[in-house]
Image (tube, rainbow, N blue to C red; front, side):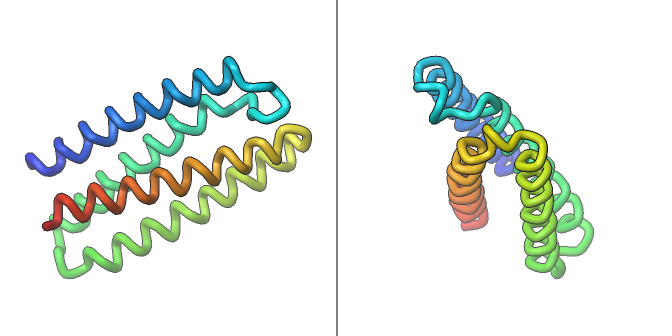
Length: 124
């Protein structure tokens, strides 16, 4: 349980810092380079990461042998959901789509890296 709260605390602190940076960028960067929805991307990834973690931990507690399959399945579902978000946003906001896509991709990479790094720290 301690590892769970450690993961959640580190993820929350990291997300808060990232949110602050994204808010500052959205306020002071030229509007042509920043998506109007930049500040919503960090909370989205925070919630997705947290919900995925909760889901996988509950399933793994019931049957630890399925942990890899559950993690890979959850990652696949998450990736598909991200694709849906990008397609819908691109169709609804064509003008803002390039800036949003770049921001989304950046945060996707950052959160994927942090999630894997925290998971590896906890599992070892």
